[in-house]
Length: 484
Image (cartoon, rainbow, N blue to C red; front, side, top):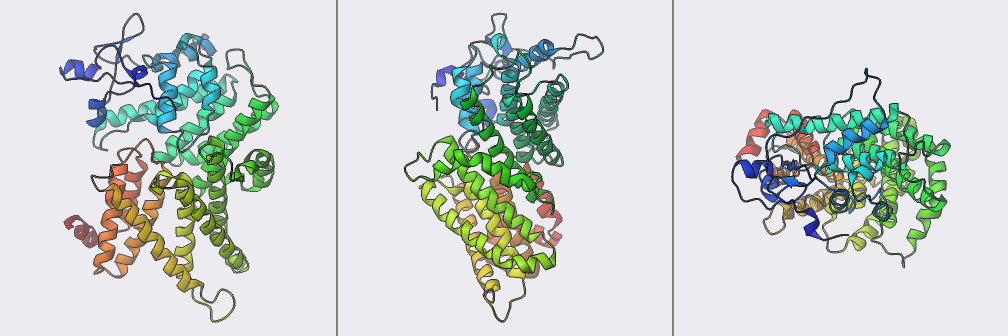
Protein backbone atom coordinates (compact mmCIF):
# COMPACT_ATOMS: atom_id res chain seq x y z
CA UNK A 1 0.00 0.00 0.00
CA UNK A 2 1.43 3.39 -0.90
CA UNK A 3 2.34 5.66 1.94
CA UNK A 4 3.69 8.77 0.22
CA UNK A 5 1.63 11.43 1.93
CA UNK A 6 3.21 14.16 -0.19
CA UNK A 7 1.12 12.92 -3.10
CA UNK A 8 -1.98 14.16 -1.26
CA UNK A 9 -0.92 17.76 -0.58
CA UNK A 10 -2.58 20.64 -2.47
CA UNK A 11 -0.61 23.75 -3.38
CA UNK A 12 -2.99 26.12 -1.55
CA UNK A 13 -5.46 26.00 1.31
CA UNK A 14 -8.99 24.74 0.80
CA UNK A 15 -11.90 27.12 0.24
CA UNK A 16 -13.29 27.02 3.79
CA UNK A 17 -9.92 27.40 5.55
CA UNK A 18 -8.86 30.17 3.17
CA UNK A 19 -12.11 32.11 3.64
CA UNK A 20 -12.04 31.75 7.42
CA UNK A 21 -8.25 32.29 7.59
CA UNK A 22 -7.64 28.99 9.37
CA UNK A 23 -4.48 26.93 9.30
CA UNK A 24 -4.95 24.30 6.58
CA UNK A 25 -2.76 21.22 6.10
CA UNK A 26 -3.87 21.14 2.38
CA UNK A 27 -4.44 17.37 2.47
CA UNK A 28 -6.34 15.82 -0.43
CA UNK A 29 -9.14 14.97 -0.85
CA UNK A 30 -10.11 16.56 2.52
CA UNK A 31 -7.96 18.69 4.81
CA UNK A 32 -7.65 17.47 8.41
CA UNK A 33 -9.51 20.44 9.94
CA UNK A 34 -12.56 20.15 7.67
CA UNK A 35 -12.58 16.39 8.19
CA UNK A 36 -12.43 16.77 11.97
CA UNK A 37 -15.19 19.40 12.00
CA UNK A 38 -17.27 17.31 9.55
CA UNK A 39 -17.32 20.16 7.02
CA UNK A 40 -17.26 19.77 3.26
CA UNK A 41 -13.77 20.42 1.92
CA UNK A 42 -13.28 21.96 -1.53
CA UNK A 43 -10.26 23.18 -3.46
CA UNK A 44 -10.43 25.74 -6.24
CA UNK A 45 -8.88 24.70 -9.54
CA UNK A 46 -6.37 27.12 -10.99
CA UNK A 47 -5.87 27.43 -14.78
CA UNK A 48 -2.82 25.18 -14.54
CA UNK A 49 -4.84 22.39 -12.94
CA UNK A 50 -3.54 22.74 -9.37
CA UNK A 51 -5.59 23.55 -6.32
CA UNK A 52 -5.80 27.09 -5.05
CA UNK A 53 -7.47 29.22 -2.38
CA UNK A 54 -11.15 29.82 -3.20
CA UNK A 55 -14.60 30.79 -3.74
CA UNK A 56 -17.66 28.81 -4.41
CA UNK A 57 -17.60 25.32 -5.86
CA UNK A 58 -18.45 25.02 -9.52
CA UNK A 59 -21.93 23.71 -10.34
CA UNK A 60 -22.40 20.13 -11.44
CA UNK A 61 -21.74 19.76 -15.15
CA UNK A 62 -24.85 19.49 -17.23
CA UNK A 63 -25.26 17.63 -20.48
CA UNK A 64 -28.18 18.21 -22.79
CA UNK A 65 -29.99 15.07 -23.90
CA UNK A 66 -32.04 17.04 -26.45
CA UNK A 67 -29.18 18.77 -28.23
CA UNK A 68 -28.08 15.62 -30.03
CA UNK A 69 -24.53 16.17 -28.74
CA UNK A 70 -24.66 13.77 -25.80
CA UNK A 71 -21.89 11.20 -26.36
CA UNK A 72 -19.18 9.26 -24.56
CA UNK A 73 -16.70 12.16 -24.73
CA UNK A 74 -19.22 14.55 -23.17
CA UNK A 75 -19.95 12.06 -20.39
CA UNK A 76 -16.26 11.58 -19.69
CA UNK A 77 -15.69 15.37 -19.60
CA UNK A 78 -18.55 15.76 -17.12
CA UNK A 79 -17.07 13.06 -14.84
CA UNK A 80 -13.60 14.60 -15.02
CA UNK A 81 -14.99 17.96 -13.86
CA UNK A 82 -16.06 16.18 -10.68
CA UNK A 83 -12.65 14.58 -10.16
CA UNK A 84 -10.21 17.48 -10.40
CA UNK A 85 -8.09 18.69 -8.56
CA UNK A 86 -7.56 15.17 -7.22
CA UNK A 87 -5.21 13.10 -9.37
CA UNK A 88 -5.71 9.48 -10.49
CA UNK A 89 -2.99 8.48 -8.02
CA UNK A 90 -4.86 10.26 -5.20
CA UNK A 91 -8.04 8.31 -5.93
CA UNK A 92 -6.21 5.00 -6.06
CA UNK A 93 -4.56 5.81 -2.73
CA UNK A 94 -7.95 6.61 -1.20
CA UNK A 95 -9.25 3.21 -2.30
CA UNK A 96 -6.16 1.46 -0.89
CA UNK A 97 -6.58 3.16 2.48
CA UNK A 98 -10.36 3.14 2.97
CA UNK A 99 -11.89 0.24 0.99
CA UNK A 100 -9.29 -2.33 -0.10
CA UNK A 101 -8.41 -3.50 3.45
CA UNK A 102 -11.88 -5.01 3.93
CA UNK A 103 -13.44 -5.26 0.44
CA UNK A 104 -10.70 -5.83 -2.20
CA UNK A 105 -12.86 -6.23 -5.31
CA UNK A 106 -10.72 -4.00 -7.55
CA UNK A 107 -7.30 -5.13 -8.74
CA UNK A 108 -4.97 -2.42 -7.42
CA UNK A 109 -1.94 -3.83 -9.26
CA UNK A 110 -3.75 -3.74 -12.60
CA UNK A 111 -5.05 -0.22 -12.05
CA UNK A 112 -1.63 0.98 -10.97
CA UNK A 113 0.05 -0.50 -14.05
CA UNK A 114 -2.36 1.43 -16.28
CA UNK A 115 -2.68 4.59 -14.21
CA UNK A 116 -3.05 7.57 -16.56
CA UNK A 117 -0.82 10.58 -15.76
CA UNK A 118 -3.75 13.01 -16.26
CA UNK A 119 -7.52 12.76 -16.37
CA UNK A 120 -7.58 13.74 -20.04
CA UNK A 121 -5.75 10.51 -20.83
CA UNK A 122 -8.02 8.37 -18.64
CA UNK A 123 -10.50 6.00 -20.35
CA UNK A 124 -14.18 6.62 -19.59
CA UNK A 125 -14.66 3.52 -17.44
CA UNK A 126 -11.55 4.34 -15.37
CA UNK A 127 -12.87 7.85 -14.70
CA UNK A 128 -16.25 6.38 -13.75
CA UNK A 129 -14.63 3.95 -11.28
CA UNK A 130 -12.69 6.82 -9.71
CA UNK A 131 -15.90 8.81 -9.31
CA UNK A 132 -17.44 5.83 -7.48
CA UNK A 133 -14.36 5.52 -5.26
CA UNK A 134 -14.69 9.19 -4.31
CA UNK A 135 -18.37 8.61 -3.53
CA UNK A 136 -17.82 5.70 -1.15
CA UNK A 137 -14.85 7.36 0.58
CA UNK A 138 -16.74 10.65 1.02
CA UNK A 139 -17.46 11.86 4.54
CA UNK A 140 -21.20 11.87 5.30
CA UNK A 141 -22.86 14.92 6.91
CA UNK A 142 -22.04 15.39 10.58
CA UNK A 143 -25.71 15.13 11.58
CA UNK A 144 -29.07 14.51 9.89
CA UNK A 145 -30.02 18.09 10.81
CA UNK A 146 -27.15 19.48 8.72
CA UNK A 147 -29.35 20.19 5.70
CA UNK A 148 -26.74 21.68 3.36
CA UNK A 149 -24.15 18.94 3.78
CA UNK A 150 -26.81 16.25 3.70
CA UNK A 151 -28.16 17.66 0.44
CA UNK A 152 -24.68 17.77 -1.13
CA UNK A 153 -23.93 14.23 0.03
CA UNK A 154 -27.18 12.92 -1.46
CA UNK A 155 -26.62 14.94 -4.63
CA UNK A 156 -23.20 13.35 -5.09
CA UNK A 157 -24.80 9.91 -4.79
CA UNK A 158 -27.62 10.74 -7.23
CA UNK A 159 -25.17 12.26 -9.69
CA UNK A 160 -23.03 9.11 -9.63
CA UNK A 161 -26.11 6.92 -10.11
CA UNK A 162 -27.27 9.01 -13.07
CA UNK A 163 -23.78 8.79 -14.59
CA UNK A 164 -23.94 5.00 -14.34
CA UNK A 165 -27.36 5.07 -16.01
CA UNK A 166 -26.00 7.28 -18.80
CA UNK A 167 -23.07 4.93 -19.30
CA UNK A 168 -25.47 2.02 -19.59
CA UNK A 169 -27.69 3.96 -22.00
CA UNK A 170 -24.72 4.60 -24.26
CA UNK A 171 -24.05 0.85 -24.46
CA UNK A 172 -20.91 0.90 -22.35
CA UNK A 173 -20.08 -2.16 -20.25
CA UNK A 174 -16.68 -3.30 -19.01
CA UNK A 175 -15.06 -4.83 -15.95
CA UNK A 176 -14.46 -1.38 -14.48
CA UNK A 177 -18.07 -0.25 -15.00
CA UNK A 178 -19.35 -3.38 -13.25
CA UNK A 179 -16.89 -2.76 -10.39
CA UNK A 180 -18.21 0.82 -10.29
CA UNK A 181 -21.71 -0.57 -9.79
CA UNK A 182 -20.45 -2.81 -6.98
CA UNK A 183 -18.92 0.17 -5.15
CA UNK A 184 -22.12 2.21 -5.48
CA UNK A 185 -24.15 -0.70 -4.08
CA UNK A 186 -21.67 -0.97 -1.22
CA UNK A 187 -22.26 2.76 -0.62
CA UNK A 188 -26.03 2.14 -0.53
CA UNK A 189 -25.57 -0.65 2.02
CA UNK A 190 -23.23 1.40 4.20
CA UNK A 191 -25.54 4.41 4.30
CA UNK A 192 -28.84 2.54 4.52
CA UNK A 193 -30.16 3.38 1.06
CA UNK A 194 -32.94 0.80 0.77
CA UNK A 195 -34.60 -0.43 -1.39
CA UNK A 196 -31.95 1.06 -3.71
CA UNK A 197 -29.32 -1.52 -2.68
CA UNK A 198 -31.77 -4.38 -3.21
CA UNK A 199 -32.56 -3.12 -6.71
CA UNK A 200 -28.94 -2.34 -7.57
CA UNK A 201 -27.67 -5.85 -6.86
CA UNK A 202 -29.97 -7.23 -9.58
CA UNK A 203 -28.60 -4.69 -12.08
CA UNK A 204 -25.01 -5.69 -11.21
CA UNK A 205 -25.75 -9.34 -11.87
CA UNK A 206 -27.17 -8.53 -15.33
CA UNK A 207 -24.20 -6.29 -16.11
CA UNK A 208 -21.79 -9.07 -15.06
CA UNK A 209 -23.69 -11.57 -17.24
CA UNK A 210 -23.37 -9.19 -20.20
CA UNK A 211 -19.57 -9.27 -19.87
CA UNK A 212 -19.59 -12.92 -20.94
CA UNK A 213 -20.99 -12.07 -24.35
CA UNK A 214 -19.21 -8.77 -24.99
CA UNK A 215 -16.82 -7.70 -22.24
CA UNK A 216 -15.82 -4.38 -23.85
CA UNK A 217 -17.53 -2.22 -26.40
CA UNK A 218 -15.65 0.95 -27.17
CA UNK A 219 -12.14 2.20 -27.76
CA UNK A 220 -12.68 4.85 -25.07
CA UNK A 221 -12.65 2.10 -22.44
CA UNK A 222 -9.66 0.59 -20.68
CA UNK A 223 -7.45 -1.71 -22.69
CA UNK A 224 -8.99 -5.13 -23.26
CA UNK A 225 -7.54 -7.60 -20.74
CA UNK A 226 -5.80 -10.80 -21.70
CA UNK A 227 -7.30 -14.13 -20.65
CA UNK A 228 -5.47 -14.28 -17.32
CA UNK A 229 -6.50 -10.73 -16.40
CA UNK A 230 -10.03 -11.41 -17.63
CA UNK A 231 -10.34 -14.37 -15.27
CA UNK A 232 -8.93 -12.36 -12.37
CA UNK A 233 -11.36 -9.49 -12.95
CA UNK A 234 -14.31 -11.86 -13.35
CA UNK A 235 -13.36 -13.60 -10.09
CA UNK A 236 -13.18 -10.31 -8.20
CA UNK A 237 -16.53 -9.19 -9.62
CA UNK A 238 -18.43 -12.38 -8.77
CA UNK A 239 -16.89 -12.52 -5.29
CA UNK A 240 -18.13 -8.97 -4.69
CA UNK A 241 -21.58 -9.81 -6.08
CA UNK A 242 -22.03 -12.94 -3.94
CA UNK A 243 -20.95 -11.19 -0.73
CA UNK A 244 -23.20 -8.15 -1.25
CA UNK A 245 -26.16 -10.20 -2.49
CA UNK A 246 -26.10 -12.45 0.57
CA UNK A 247 -25.74 -9.52 2.96
CA UNK A 248 -28.53 -7.55 1.30
CA UNK A 249 -30.85 -10.57 1.56
CA UNK A 250 -30.75 -10.61 5.37
CA UNK A 251 -31.62 -6.90 5.36
CA UNK A 252 -34.52 -7.21 2.93
CA UNK A 253 -36.89 -9.86 4.22
CA UNK A 254 -37.35 -13.62 3.89
CA UNK A 255 -36.49 -13.95 0.20
CA UNK A 256 -33.24 -15.82 -0.63
CA UNK A 257 -30.34 -14.03 -2.36
CA UNK A 258 -30.82 -13.48 -6.10
CA UNK A 259 -27.74 -15.59 -6.82
CA UNK A 260 -28.98 -18.49 -4.68
CA UNK A 261 -30.23 -20.54 -7.64
CA UNK A 262 -26.91 -20.03 -9.46
CA UNK A 263 -24.49 -20.37 -6.55
CA UNK A 264 -23.26 -23.82 -7.58
CA UNK A 265 -22.32 -22.76 -11.12
CA UNK A 266 -20.70 -19.57 -9.81
CA UNK A 267 -18.71 -21.53 -7.22
CA UNK A 268 -17.58 -23.98 -9.90
CA UNK A 269 -16.13 -21.03 -11.79
CA UNK A 270 -14.51 -19.55 -8.68
CA UNK A 271 -13.17 -22.87 -7.34
CA UNK A 272 -9.87 -22.97 -9.33
CA UNK A 273 -8.97 -19.54 -7.94
CA UNK A 274 -10.35 -19.79 -4.41
CA UNK A 275 -9.43 -23.38 -3.49
CA UNK A 276 -5.63 -22.79 -3.50
CA UNK A 277 -6.19 -20.08 -0.87
CA UNK A 278 -6.90 -22.82 1.69
CA UNK A 279 -3.24 -23.83 1.54
CA UNK A 280 -1.72 -22.83 4.92
CA UNK A 281 1.38 -21.60 3.10
CA UNK A 282 -0.64 -19.00 1.19
CA UNK A 283 -0.17 -15.34 2.04
CA UNK A 284 -3.33 -14.67 4.09
CA UNK A 285 -3.07 -10.92 3.50
CA UNK A 286 -3.47 -11.19 -0.28
CA UNK A 287 -6.72 -9.78 -1.67
CA UNK A 288 -7.88 -13.10 -3.12
CA UNK A 289 -7.31 -14.90 0.21
CA UNK A 290 -9.29 -12.26 2.08
CA UNK A 291 -12.10 -12.44 -0.47
CA UNK A 292 -12.07 -16.23 -0.16
CA UNK A 293 -12.75 -15.97 3.58
CA UNK A 294 -15.54 -13.47 2.92
CA UNK A 295 -17.10 -15.86 0.41
CA UNK A 296 -16.98 -18.71 2.94
CA UNK A 297 -18.60 -16.62 5.66
CA UNK A 298 -21.27 -15.21 3.31
CA UNK A 299 -22.09 -18.72 2.04
CA UNK A 300 -22.78 -19.92 5.58
CA UNK A 301 -24.78 -16.75 6.28
CA UNK A 302 -26.89 -17.57 3.22
CA UNK A 303 -27.54 -21.11 4.48
CA UNK A 304 -28.66 -19.81 7.87
CA UNK A 305 -30.92 -17.19 6.26
CA UNK A 306 -32.59 -19.67 3.90
CA UNK A 307 -33.11 -22.30 6.61
CA UNK A 308 -34.60 -19.82 9.09
CA UNK A 309 -36.99 -18.51 6.45
CA UNK A 310 -38.08 -21.89 5.12
CA UNK A 311 -41.59 -23.24 5.72
CA UNK A 312 -42.33 -24.95 9.05
CA UNK A 313 -42.30 -28.42 7.42
CA UNK A 314 -38.99 -27.76 5.66
CA UNK A 315 -37.57 -26.28 8.84
CA UNK A 316 -38.24 -29.43 10.84
CA UNK A 317 -36.48 -31.46 8.14
CA UNK A 318 -33.52 -29.02 8.04
CA UNK A 319 -32.89 -28.67 11.77
CA UNK A 320 -29.94 -31.06 11.72
CA UNK A 321 -28.49 -29.30 8.68
CA UNK A 322 -28.86 -26.02 10.58
CA UNK A 323 -26.86 -27.50 13.47
CA UNK A 324 -24.12 -28.62 11.07
CA UNK A 325 -24.01 -25.14 9.51
CA UNK A 326 -23.64 -23.57 12.96
CA UNK A 327 -20.82 -26.00 13.79
CA UNK A 328 -19.07 -25.06 10.54
CA UNK A 329 -19.50 -21.37 11.38
CA UNK A 330 -17.90 -21.88 14.77
CA UNK A 331 -14.91 -23.60 13.13
CA UNK A 332 -14.54 -20.80 10.55
CA UNK A 333 -14.88 -18.23 13.32
CA UNK A 334 -11.97 -19.87 15.15
CA UNK A 335 -9.81 -19.87 12.01
CA UNK A 336 -10.56 -16.21 11.31
CA UNK A 337 -9.81 -15.24 14.91
CA UNK A 338 -6.35 -16.78 14.54
CA UNK A 339 -5.77 -15.03 11.21
CA UNK A 340 -6.93 -11.65 12.53
CA UNK A 341 -4.55 -11.94 15.47
CA UNK A 342 -4.32 -8.86 17.66
CA UNK A 343 -6.61 -6.79 15.47
CA UNK A 344 -10.13 -6.28 16.78
CA UNK A 345 -12.56 -8.46 14.87
CA UNK A 346 -14.90 -5.52 14.20
CA UNK A 347 -12.35 -4.60 11.52
CA UNK A 348 -12.58 -8.11 10.02
CA UNK A 349 -15.53 -8.38 7.59
CA UNK A 350 -15.42 -12.19 7.51
CA UNK A 351 -15.85 -12.32 11.29
CA UNK A 352 -18.64 -9.75 11.05
CA UNK A 353 -20.58 -12.04 8.71
CA UNK A 354 -19.85 -15.14 10.83
CA UNK A 355 -21.13 -13.47 13.97
CA UNK A 356 -24.23 -12.12 12.23
CA UNK A 357 -25.06 -15.67 11.09
CA UNK A 358 -24.46 -17.07 14.57
CA UNK A 359 -26.59 -14.36 16.19
CA UNK A 360 -29.46 -15.14 13.81
CA UNK A 361 -29.16 -18.89 14.39
CA UNK A 362 -28.81 -18.76 18.18
CA UNK A 363 -31.58 -16.18 18.55
CA UNK A 364 -33.90 -18.52 16.65
CA UNK A 365 -32.69 -21.59 18.54
CA UNK A 366 -33.23 -19.95 21.94
CA UNK A 367 -36.92 -19.46 21.08
CA UNK A 368 -37.63 -22.98 19.80
CA UNK A 369 -39.54 -25.15 22.32
CA UNK A 370 -37.11 -27.74 23.75
CA UNK A 371 -37.50 -31.34 22.59
CA UNK A 372 -37.62 -34.22 25.04
CA UNK A 373 -35.55 -36.66 23.00
CA UNK A 374 -33.35 -37.05 19.94
CA UNK A 375 -30.09 -35.39 18.88
CA UNK A 376 -31.63 -31.91 19.11
CA UNK A 377 -33.05 -32.28 22.63
CA UNK A 378 -30.61 -29.82 24.23
CA UNK A 379 -30.55 -27.33 21.33
CA UNK A 380 -32.55 -24.63 23.10
CA UNK A 381 -30.34 -24.44 26.18
CA UNK A 382 -27.16 -24.62 24.08
CA UNK A 383 -28.46 -21.89 21.74
CA UNK A 384 -29.36 -19.66 24.70
CA UNK A 385 -25.92 -20.10 26.29
CA UNK A 386 -24.16 -19.52 22.94
CA UNK A 387 -26.28 -16.43 22.26
CA UNK A 388 -25.26 -14.92 25.60
CA UNK A 389 -21.62 -15.68 24.82
CA UNK A 390 -21.74 -13.86 21.45
CA UNK A 391 -23.60 -10.89 22.94
CA UNK A 392 -20.97 -10.59 25.67
CA UNK A 393 -18.14 -10.83 23.13
CA UNK A 394 -19.64 -8.22 20.81
CA UNK A 395 -20.31 -5.88 23.73
CA UNK A 396 -16.82 -6.22 25.21
CA UNK A 397 -15.15 -5.53 21.86
CA UNK A 398 -17.46 -2.59 21.16
CA UNK A 399 -16.70 -1.17 24.62
CA UNK A 400 -13.01 -0.99 23.73
CA UNK A 401 -13.89 1.40 20.91
CA UNK A 402 -15.66 3.66 23.38
CA UNK A 403 -12.45 4.18 25.34
CA UNK A 404 -10.04 6.97 24.42
CA UNK A 405 -7.19 4.45 24.35
CA UNK A 406 -8.72 2.62 21.37
CA UNK A 407 -10.22 5.20 18.96
CA UNK A 408 -12.15 4.01 15.92
CA UNK A 409 -10.26 3.93 12.63
CA UNK A 410 -13.10 4.74 10.24
CA UNK A 411 -10.96 3.79 7.24
CA UNK A 412 -10.82 0.18 8.44
CA UNK A 413 -14.32 -0.43 9.74
CA UNK A 414 -16.58 -2.24 7.23
CA UNK A 415 -20.30 -1.39 6.99
CA UNK A 416 -21.26 -5.00 7.86
CA UNK A 417 -20.40 -4.35 11.51
CA UNK A 418 -23.35 -1.95 11.76
CA UNK A 419 -25.89 -4.73 11.28
CA UNK A 420 -24.00 -7.00 13.72
CA UNK A 421 -24.17 -4.41 16.51
CA UNK A 422 -27.76 -3.47 15.60
CA UNK A 423 -28.86 -7.10 15.79
CA UNK A 424 -27.18 -7.51 19.17
CA UNK A 425 -28.85 -4.30 20.40
CA UNK A 426 -32.26 -5.48 19.11
CA UNK A 427 -31.95 -8.76 21.04
CA UNK A 428 -30.97 -6.94 24.25
CA UNK A 429 -33.83 -4.46 23.75
CA UNK A 430 -36.35 -7.29 23.58
CA UNK A 431 -34.92 -8.76 26.77
CA UNK A 432 -35.28 -5.41 28.53
CA UNK A 433 -38.91 -5.10 27.43
CA UNK A 434 -39.53 -8.39 29.22
CA UNK A 435 -37.38 -7.46 32.22
CA UNK A 436 -36.92 -3.69 32.44
CA UNK A 437 -35.05 -3.89 35.75
CA UNK A 438 -32.03 -5.74 34.35
CA UNK A 439 -29.15 -3.36 35.07
CA UNK A 440 -26.68 -5.54 33.16
CA UNK A 441 -28.83 -5.48 30.02
CA UNK A 442 -29.27 -1.71 30.36
CA UNK A 443 -25.51 -1.24 30.50
CA UNK A 444 -25.03 -3.51 27.47
CA UNK A 445 -27.66 -1.68 25.43
CA UNK A 446 -26.16 1.72 26.22
CA UNK A 447 -22.75 0.52 25.00
CA UNK A 448 -24.16 -0.90 21.76
CA UNK A 449 -26.25 2.21 21.02
CA UNK A 450 -23.32 4.54 21.71
CA UNK A 451 -21.22 2.53 19.28
CA UNK A 452 -23.89 2.92 16.58
CA UNK A 453 -23.94 6.66 17.23
CA UNK A 454 -20.15 6.82 16.87
CA UNK A 455 -19.94 4.72 13.69
CA UNK A 456 -22.79 6.80 12.27
CA UNK A 457 -20.08 9.36 11.53
CA UNK A 458 -18.85 6.98 8.81
CA UNK A 459 -21.84 4.80 7.87
CA UNK A 460 -25.27 6.43 7.96
CA UNK A 461 -26.97 3.03 8.14
CA UNK A 462 -26.24 3.26 11.88
CA UNK A 463 -28.68 6.20 12.13
CA UNK A 464 -31.29 4.06 10.37
CA UNK A 465 -30.72 1.22 12.83
CA UNK A 466 -31.03 3.56 15.81
CA UNK A 467 -34.39 4.77 14.49
CA UNK A 468 -35.58 1.16 14.18
CA UNK A 469 -34.41 0.46 17.74
CA UNK A 470 -36.25 3.54 18.98
CA UNK A 471 -39.44 2.42 17.25
CA UNK A 472 -39.19 -0.94 19.02
CA UNK A 473 -38.47 0.64 22.40
CA UNK A 474 -41.04 1.98 24.85
CA UNK A 475 -40.84 5.68 25.87
CA UNK A 476 -40.15 4.59 29.44
CA UNK A 477 -37.15 2.48 28.42
CA UNK A 478 -35.81 5.27 26.17
CA UNK A 479 -35.97 7.66 29.12
CA UNK A 480 -34.06 5.20 31.30
CA UNK A 481 -31.40 4.78 28.59
CA UNK A 482 -30.98 8.57 28.29
CA UNK A 483 -30.46 8.89 32.02
CA UNK A 484 -27.49 6.50 31.97
